[in-house]
Length: 176
Length: 148
Image (cartoon, rainbow over the protein chains, first blue to last red):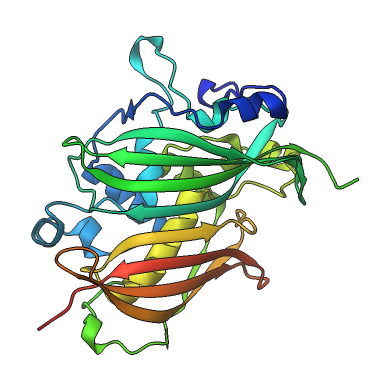
């Protein structure tokens, strides 16, 4: 297991997890504002030539600035792998749900983008624990599905996106 | 590649979108971790991925979503915008796999619940691997420009 703090899972029982349902995180603000460099690195990864990501003048006229790729939404709130001062990166709430599973994989994601997110925006997200499923067996192992709802605001407090995510927290193993 | 913009008024549904094919090398999966800052070890450490029950490292949700968005906006043009996307990770795209994206615009509607009204197109996208396995079904809504 990687020792990176941002993936340090909380362990506990299903009953422990259920007690956390309905809880909301403190607002977390992105470590850096939306930047052209990260927009273009992501567009390059996806091989996406969309002018909204590359053509500053077109993007300014169309969106008010280089457009953040909608798919990179969650990435803005992931802390950098190291920060000065030994400050531990703040882990997403979904990793702090106490459960027995030793690892996780994402299962589903449903996002609504209410307003364009553009270069220079600084995003803040609040995460809420919506539900934790009873134990399920899948091809990967046995575990629980965790549903969260994230609300993203930009610096003027406008809600720019809401993201409902389902993650499978499991212990690897073949079906019995 | 994204060229000219389609006009919402000129679209008839249903219509098939051009297929997008992308080979995902090990380098691309590592680029994925770097570009998204998602250093979950399943995305860069093959032995971790294998201990999870996977053959090797795999792309994350953001990469899958970005590929689906590209299928939609390559077709509609750069003045369109994804306003909703719902996807399910039914299977994984591993290093060495090829992603194939096939989209179909299934409905167009004018959303009058907001002012000014929005011109929307609903698109269904299937991301499969080179074996034809459906890895990620996607439902996506684009807002599109409307010319007078």
